[in-house]
Length: 135
Image (cartoon, rainbow, N blue to C red):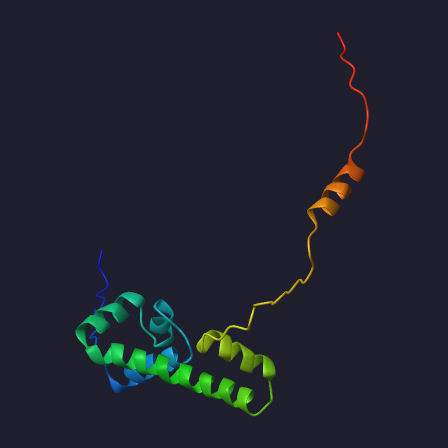
């Protein structure tokens, strides 16, 4: 009985320019965590090891996320400021600038209250009757 010889080549993890670009692009598209690893062609465990080995991997990830958010913010800002979408303008004010629409209502009542009139109205609502005790 003979065994086939299988060659094993250990994986060399390096933050090559190609891997850093793949991480950057995945993060720019909004992917996070293990999804970045898969999009960059790596297993999540290899991606985490690579992050620990080379700080450029995390930098590429953070830069990609920031650039993606900035690009989308620019699209929203243009839509809001050029009058294309007023709802976007309102949402930007609410969610990014902590703007809140005025919720206060001012009510003024100028009416005099008469105690004797109130008692007369209360007496008019009273039902007159007799009470009978039942054994």
